[in-house]
Length: 281
Ligand code: HPA
Image (cartoon, rainbow, N blue to C red; front, side, top):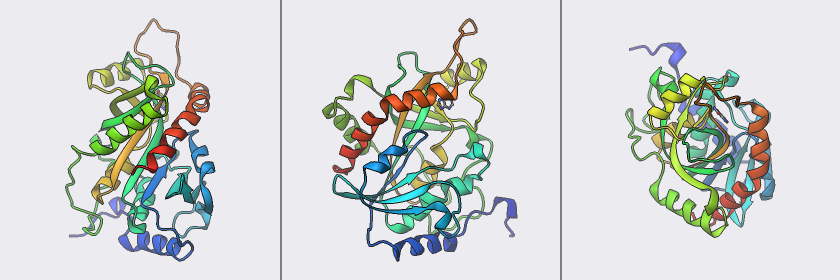
């Protein structure tokens, strides 16, 4: 049966071409990949022995940002400084393309960071949330990176998502957070992806709270779905940059400036946490 062209995914051969292009240009063979969320890209600046590939130089990629290979605390890793968001107009396929390339590079563990709005009433701005589970709201409407022809070399047609966020990595993250004096602002909870780019209405926030969502954001879930399909272990960390508004009497308004200001305040803590964590993986 012919697959509708609008639902075709990047081919295995395209991803392999990108991976092979990278493999001949670096001797590094990282087992850990890190996707930096909005305002959290400075993590890549801490990498030693850097080899940097601007996305526009990489065959098939061609967008803004860069891929940084190198060592974090002597541990080889590859870091995406700049990710592709669905709300920017990239297809879900493009959003997840780098994850499939990571898989073909030999990466085994993916660490994803993001900025998110706090829905759990006990969360504070500046908290770091270890993601325990997610709700794929765009996926409810068919926006999943796995829609379309399935190439079994990436994984099974119907992957399980009940263990999307690796329990051992979560335990390690919590342990490391306490060692790094981040325990006082650490949470563990459920992340929900919305397509954005609008912040949520009060009614939407109320629904999400009833769904059991602790934090809401506009990224991460497609990458995690693609990563889990090809067997990568995943750790997700959300920085709570603002409190989602759930009360009609509130004068608070979610805004991007607050999101960036909070990431600026907590970025160093998150970087320290990830830097020490990678040495234990
Ligand atoms: N909603 C959605 N995405 C976000 C938010 C929010 O409140 N804060 C940071 N990213």
